[in-house]
Length: 466
Length: 39
Image (tube, rainbow over all chains, first blue to last red; front, side, top):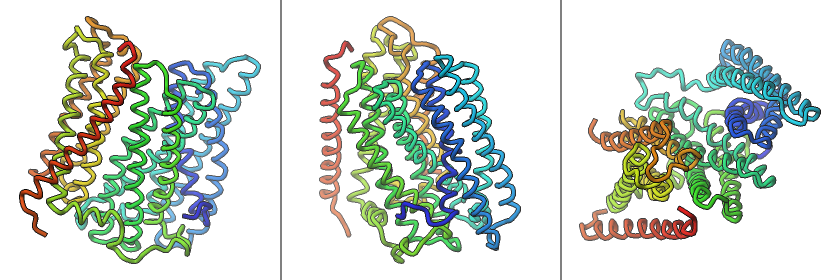
């Protein structure tokens, strides 16, 4: 990996994700800060908004130089590039205005002694508008280079929609993780529990998003190699997916430890400092691995960013993932992990059923806090199933990925697991004691959890039959 | 490579016991850490 990009295109690819995808995560932290009235989080977000506003300048400049460098490339559509430039300009102007408004809000707070609520709300509106513009600019930007998205769908066994989904999804856990890490360190330094909790939640969400990112990545491999696409190299894909496998483990370690500490916080009312530093350690290692994974992924379809030292093996069958694929195809390894997968489902569904039914009004003689203690059983099931599920997927990924119920199953895993986070975050639900009814909002979440995990199991079982 | 039924059953039992054993040991420790709390 070369840490310093060697071309304008590389700079632009790297920088442009921060004012676009990054904005989504900063907005999430900012809205949390507004809802819970946390001054530190609000001010931290305003500083980051200002930073993103400044980042608009190098993003624009690198984009402009890239356009000049690619203007003679016959594969690049001048019309698409012009559309991306126009929307990108408007988006970057909006980022700069949002950043400027953040600086003004921070400056004015020096005289007022507090942040002005109207100014804070104006920044929400500006950030939302910017985000919408960035979605359009980003999509047009991907279209400039990714010719495979316009391939004839009928000639493709695995639809390019997977590649498209992977392109969008892979930025969420990577960029989100960068911002979660930044806010987490801020929370640790300032000993601010709200910032620490919010960052831990984003670590968990990034880990969950790692699942569809990995799965869509596996599908993209088939979409780009069967039949092959000109300019795409299987060894480069293998190098990327080997690192992606390590990233999934890193995300899992960070996400699960973060979830456990969120769960323990509910019962103990405080965080354990050593565990918080352990999570920091996992997060820093994961960040390093993820940066390398992203770099290798970028090389798959961006020959313009390759330099001589990036040369990899020419063997399309090399790599650890390939070795696991061969191993798990033996019945003696496939069947044990499939058995573990079924145990995992039993744990997940059993726990989701008990906790959700209490929220929905069953067993009112038991407090919510009592059933909350059962949640690690379900999370244990999720860990077992993500690991065993990945091994099972590698046994015959092309068949699984092209099954019509596979994509909904993966989407429901993320929805179902993210919804369970609510059980450890809601203050109102935590205070539901024996004999009391849960709030209506919590009941909707409980229903969503049950529906999602029912769908996951049904989607998984149907893979072999439709 | 062909595997006999006995070998398959042995590996299934070994992997399941190892995974569940590790998992429940972790769960036991985790529950101990919150046992002192009011809940």
